[in-house]
Image 1 (cartoon, rainbow, N blue to C red):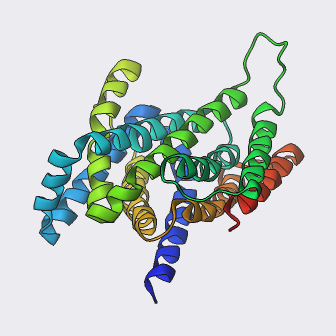
Image 2 (image 1 turned 180 degrees about the vertical axis):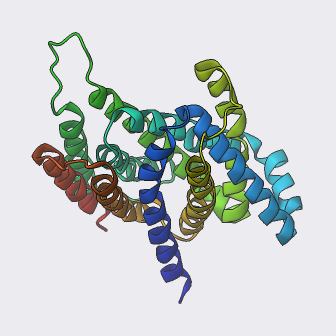
Length: 296
């Protein structure tokens, strides 16, 4: 398998794994508060990354990343690790996982736009049209069932807005790590940003939930946390960053379409979620938007 095919394969596996994270997270959040759950997940992932780097003899390169480029990796840790997880986890508490995953997939559109603005990747009128079509789909999903005259804000609406913030945070993370993944390699780039996300999650956990020291109340909760740490926070993020180091940021983004498909199937299977007509139509607009946004 040549390098480009391997990169696409890595991106596909990464997105499938991330698609499973919604159901696993929702099950885990039945036992733990959302920010604390994210903190423990990232902490375990950081321990695994450290062991991986130690066994590979790459501590010198990790030290270089921390000393030379710590502002970039800290900002990546704040956006793609801390904020993305916080917004996503809280959104999953209030909103069906299928709906959250569909809103999150719009990071593809945001990545294409940010790649044009900051990485100087080419964008055409057709790409811009795709971005606006996708945004229309997101707005349909977000505002479905929302009554602007009502004093109360529906939980699903609030969750969708949080998911949109998570999507933006992930898009910024992707743009930040594009060049650093090429410079340091996917392992160091992913590990450094993951580790530097811990202080932000710790502060958020203390401020929002009082204590970061609570643990899962059952074996199932602990296994879910371990699964998310190994297969999503470590393996999926590593594969995503590897793909990012080999391909255009906008091209990698198109593969994210697989994520809501996996998440929706698991949402229906585990939680009895329903795919309503507005949700399906919004999804169709998002998918069409991504198709045109990624078209060369």
